[in-house]
Length: 157
Image (tube, rainbow, N blue to C red; front, side, top):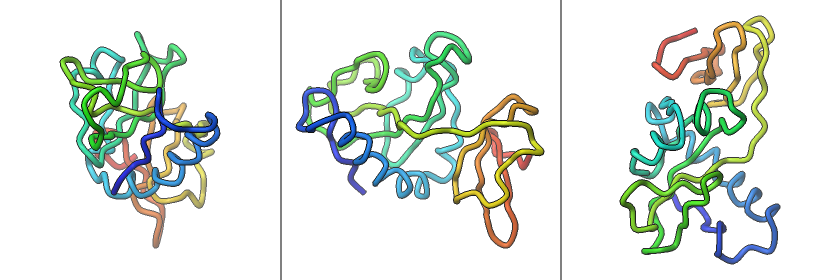
């Protein structure tokens, strides 16, 4: 799988093109990520300490601290050339000591949240939901014959 490289300094006519390219590849990346998708990283510094390996996705709890507004999903892109990615501290995170050929790329998708009782009844496979009752993100890891929600530690919730 190859994720289009349409970030910082690369050809893209608009931010909408970037988001469309990522959205077109994210379901495949997430479906292939298996257990690696269940990683949760506390902040940008900790994310920079993890080298991106395709395919993987990580949930970031916050930029500097939990729920500070920078939380979100990042996918690995390790298919670039030296200097292709430049860390911008928000949407493109290059690992510490990296040469810019790999990076974590923020996925711009809406994440719904609510109480445990409000979980979506028919989620997409690997759909993320912010469970406010549990105080953590969870994923729909099985959707047929019934929905199974799993937390970042791999436990059924």
